[in-house]
Amino acid sequence: MSEAVAPRSWLRTLPGTLWLLALATGALAWWLVAWPGVTLSNVERHATHFPQVFVHTIGGTVMLLVGALNLWLGVTRRHFRWHRPLGWLYLAGGTLGAVSAIVLALGNGHRKPPMPFALDPSRASDTGWALATLGAAWLLATAMAWRAARNRRFDAHRQWMVRSYVLVWSFVLCRLVGKVPAMPELGAGAAIIWLSWVLPLLACEVVLQWPAGRRQVSGR
Image 1 (cartoon, helix red, strand yellow):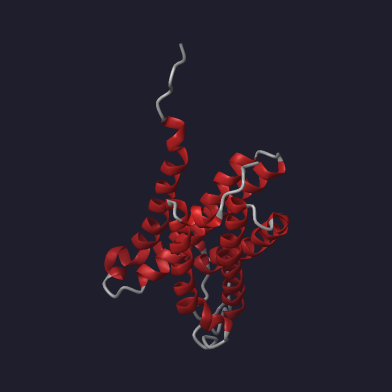
Image 2 (cartoon, helix red, strand yellow):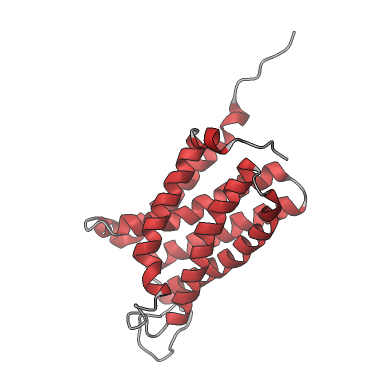
């Protein structure tokens, strides 16, 4: 297990600064995207599939808030007794959010019947496939984090949880970038989604693996 880190000193580091940035942008995206679902003010817009949208909203909220809090607990070791139960909550809520995202992305929710709501991958758009792949990537990264923790491989667990939360934040990034008027013209929005999670995950991987590639100092 890692040693405790003073909260103030950690916030002055690059990971701490990025954590604060993720919190701030996550809060903005939640207000722009999730708040209408929580307050039931967008029911008419999603009339044929609002239950799935609501489940995704709640799951996504758990992903953002509980994931950020648990990263904080894991680094600072403050109130660490809550780390495991919050981890289970993150896993359960995030799974609901990711699975519902895949269902929404590959479904026919905005299409009229014959079926009120059904998976229809053959008719999914490029944007739908990009979102579904992001949801699947989160499920995979989080499953690997759970497996590592179960086997008490805590270094691997920490790295997979960082990847998992980077993918959560990628949902935020693609939502915020999609609000820029000119951006949806790029690949009809699909390219935005792909770039919003592939590039952050690649950057994350470079940071996580950077120490492994440092020059070895041979002893005499």
